[in-house]
Image (cartoon, rainbow, N blue to C red; front, side, top):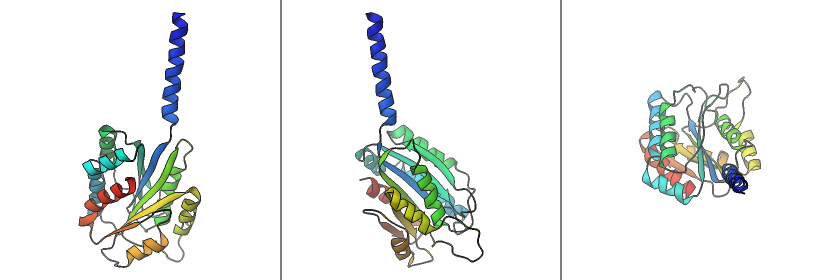
Length: 225
């Protein structure tokens, strides 16, 4: 009788663990960060530092807690002819995973350059979100960039922005944007009309990279709240 009881308890515990591991998260968020040739090494490093700091920020941590179960990944994108860099999903269920996520971003060594292939960056984010093991009630790609999609003759074929946007719509993914309009004052309009998609999608605009750190914190709070 004692053995039967222990066996029943073990089965119940296993079922609970399995249920938790298969449970859906409330929000799966991919940060798609511009690493194209228009981004200098200093600007690239600043973006990393700002995102890492955001995941140590009290207001962002509070927004994550209020959003329920949140899982976050990162894509560093550039020229679509070369692979984007990714940091896989981490469940933000406390200070420890948030710190782990921040440290992984800080350890990232740049390997992306070249053309501003926004479509390729979004597509990589959609690939992460479409994995069979991922179950989420809300899917978001949060893209940041300082330029429009590169359009040039005689380029090798790559995933276009139109293709990526269409796939996002089919998957029910919301695309939001953080625009650094230090050289193109109309860039926010381009992202509004050509990039973002989905219910309540939005564009945030900043004028210089110096504003990036505050903007990414505000953007994360807005997306998760």
